[in-house]
Image (tube, rainbow, N blue to C red):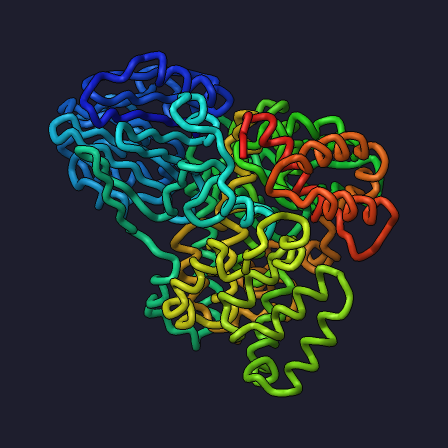
Length: 624
């Protein structure tokens, strides 16, 4: 796990070494173990290393292949690199790193080499002979890759702030991205919060040559449904799911440093730990965050799981107020603004302080195995879609009744009723909304804004024909991967864990597992009880009391804190934000006062997002 960066000058002039140094230094937290760069001809490549596989200096980057034709910077892990290495018997390897296997494979097969690898990654390879740069990102978008291009240069990096450190990009806010942020608490599509900086699409790669770029998509989550499996055999289906997940966990244990695991005591993290114990060569190292207040504490459940699998267990006892103490550190760690992620920062920091560099996480289980309420809701919407279609009087009355009042929830219900169809592109974005379009209109100056103009809607609508070929529950999973999961969950996991130099690996984001489960019919996947297909596939692996306990999670009193301990913090940022031209000053101030007065129609996340945005803009000197 590392930070990568590069600059290509289109005028063929050599890149000054200070430029690439500035970019890589801005990502020092991503790689505290080594820092290197090269400048030659019209290109510079930089790297910050967090040493995980082959800890020797010989595996440092930038890394050249044996022929010296190709040179690479690489962020992530190729879990099956030893298998690919066997496919290259004529190559003389000098390290035991996955880095060298990747560049050797690229030298052999070009970009098509990626079809042999299983991992999380973003990398760039410079072809010295052809003067061509290839940048590539993993299938699910686990690892970030941003870029900026103008008539003079192409700049890429693992983080937005690293590109900003080049001093080549004007620090102005992208208004369309802000609309996305207000709607869904993060920024999707190929957008970033800064004008001119974009993110490479997950499952895609780009070639840069002679001042021109060429984009390709090598994997598309909406084109993976033909697996040829006989799902009439339920037992075989469950066995195959268990096998795929066990393989995903086992692959993610490859490391030359100790590997730990987040253990909350829930189904997903317990499944990962159980399979670590089953497939690994040693008892797993598990970590639980416990709290002094019982209403937040789940460490007892985690302790039961740790005992069952004989893990080397550490319970880190914290007070809920640690989230207040670490708040500014967490907000400062945000490379891209997000209304979530504070929890991930605090947990990651505590685990990293315990001496662990790599940790497996159960994140992703809800998205794949129908763990959220909207999965069932979407099924119900399809059964009753005749009520929501057409222009009849009944629909008009339902919309009027649902829209009565000012709560955001009622506005979302009204959106569902008045939508042109119950297709996933209309229903899913509403389910993930933080602010309705009507509230965005009221609190900002984005008066013409509609949900259909968001990157999330455009993405889902553009892939509609592919998505509708899948079972209904899988349609929701795909929407989750293209929306909240990729642009909030995975971004927050990456930026908050890497802020403290912790590598997080997520077995539920194994692409082979995902491709198979997406093809499973709704009748088998329907959550009779929470994530029943996953639980049934694991058999007796999980304790009964873990499977059927009430889900708790990190639910802290942010609403109360924002009115007390955090009131001054929030008010200062809201006041400064109100002076920006895209904010309706009076409306936002009134909304804040309604919140302070206890108006139940005003939810704390709706205002917290504005606080976070202003903090991020100030921290990164972003203008309008």
